Length: 464
Ligand code: 4AD
Ligand code: MG
Image 1 (cartoon, rainbow, N blue to C red):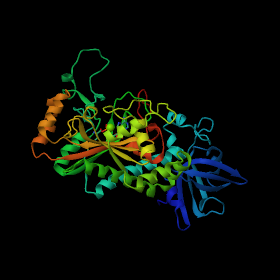
Image 2: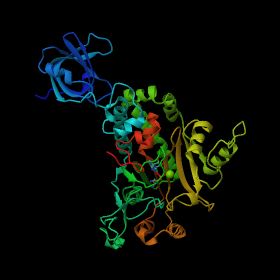
Image 3: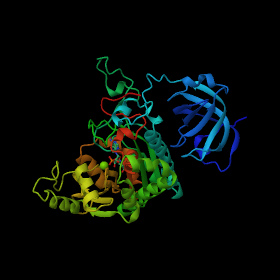
Image 4: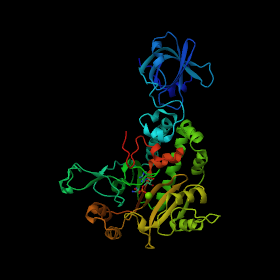
């Protein structure tokens, strides 16, 4: 008889139920005269289910060991709770201690722990309210990504994880090798597994382009890797990216898609994760509701990079004459997070799409504009996070692309197939990458990327 129910289902019950079974971890145990209350959480939702266990029931002898952190199975009847604070409770007929947790050493005591401390126990942090909620939201967000593209007729492409080409041309790649790096013998790429240098992918875009130029509208969604040695709260060495790519689409189509995508995700998560999101609005970021409202409210602002620089230059000193930014602002320099946030939080007070960046700060594949100095790039900047999406229209003209690859000193022969896509039925096409963790930071108000990744990988951190 499978009478097991999840806490979420129990709490959403519309009628009492007899003979059910709940399995989970004890959050708290309170003892009264001749009975005990167990608050049980099974990870299915934020709330706990209260079980009332009377003295003398099967398993009662184990009650002293069924404290915070212990795994238990409680059988009984789901009944309306006479107590305050919950509609349903479980009237136990039996309790089974499944796995005990030594109260002396169990690290999750009943108090608020710092994010830093919880990072050091990433194997236990999903048992806290905050991280349980976070990782349920992460799961729902991933489902919503697929829903969005499915509704629009996009096909999901599985881009390779091991690659021989550097999509972004930034050289921040992790090497994949079967050679012993510590052996000290002189060996070259030719001796290695693939007979050439291999790396973990920094982006699925090039594979997405192949499939856009055959299936039409596609997206990738998977892990990507960057060996940026920047220990910032926004960068991880391993993160997930969503990369749509559309054939017969220009930069405006791309901006429209990015805007619709973010709005859809926020609306879906508000609907599907209301209880979990409320925790973040109450405890993590008091401005969260307003930020999310702002994303849904109206159209995103759109400005060219050149206009954005002019706006930032005007604001480069505060009213008191002090420099406002740590990093310089001038045409030709990349925008830093502080600039991106200022544009979005202070100047436009909503998400802003900056487009047409200088070609020298962008990747080789971006379509060159007629002015000879900018490319059809676009970044979506949002409050708190800064850049959440980076994308562009791709260079579809074979001669222009070949010249750019040479000009940037990239290994031309590596891109032979990429060039062929421009020779055989080339079409204007566009796409972008959305950092999945940046999305989660945006919707939860969490400010450190390490706290939205199950097992974060950052410089000098490879635990769990
Ligand atoms: O702007 P990026 O580098 O663009 C690309 O990789 C393109 N190939 C995407 C495309 O056009 N298909 O990265 C895209 C997004 C960024 O806007 C950011 O949200 C996220 O990926 N991102 C990171 N997230 C976490 N940690 C890192 N180290 C990240 N680097 C980029
Ligand atoms: Mg970028």
